[in-house]
Length: 470
Ligand SMILES: [Zn+2]
Image (cartoon, rainbow, N blue to C red; front, side, top):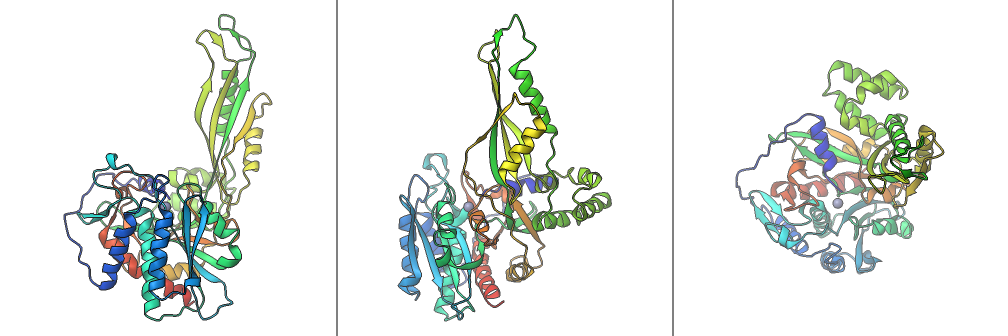
């Protein structure tokens, strides 16, 4: 996961970027359960599960032992190797109806690399300071791992039996390939056997700088990512004698066409939800345009108005933009080649091949070669925003009860798309609330408010019961 989209949402809404630091305040631990969860959190933050430390086997073994101690059958706690030095964990919580498909809960064990010398504090030691837990993985995604683990353990010890199986899937390489999620969604699909999944790998509750709550994102779709290389070749020559054809000019003309090309507007459950939420905060003209565009995606006048909002502009269509250029070999020579990288963010469920051919048609010049840059990225449809699941999430949030749930489409990838691509809807929802600019996920001094860590424990417990009882 990354947090840039949430940050972007703020910018789109014109909120200020002033930094606010909370006053130093200790957070009281209120129960043995919270103390147990904090101990688990500290223990797993100490494990370097990045591609450098490769400690997902250690973390999977450590957590597996906790589940068995809590009363889970050894056969229901499976350490699953999903690559060299990569260990995932699958825990099945048996329900009453063993024939019904289960409910999946996703989080990832691994973290982005963190170098001790760059951090103010040891990234692999949990520090509590000024109301924050600081350490690699505090926000992305070990609080999610521990929130789910603690809820499973507590419910098991209390003798709770869900109506159907709950299946916890803790993956080992969300940050470096998502092979684990693919393995669960494809090779082990029948064993996993879930109807849908809730992914803890999400920054859901968004707080404004003044501490007021802005909204709660439920991530239901992801754009896919592809790049293409445009290349023009030319015999070249001496720059003192320009030819009528020139690789740089020819490429430049092609790039202008790419800039001007607009992919068709596509409305799915998620983009429609994001638009409706934006409409409620917009002037009448924009709100009307949003309603018109949801009604008729081919309404050009409405599309122009909606696209003025930079966040909405990215969720209503596929976008492609030039990101890199390379051309020529000498100051005094005509260019023998010129090339540009164009990066596309493709709407959920759209075949990249259709995007390449649309670009080729827009460029309309056989002298411009178009070469997809191979980078494996799963194509997945948007998840339908089911009312029962949204209601369960809404009723499980206590920290900021009555917060508006906003469907969210991410422009980055998570494990969720591996499941969506095989027909299993996934909803990103973590139960945590924070100002996204304070998380520093993937960056230095990653942190999570202590208060929201403890609040999320109750969230997971309530959500499991809400979902399992529907
Ligand atoms: Zn993540």
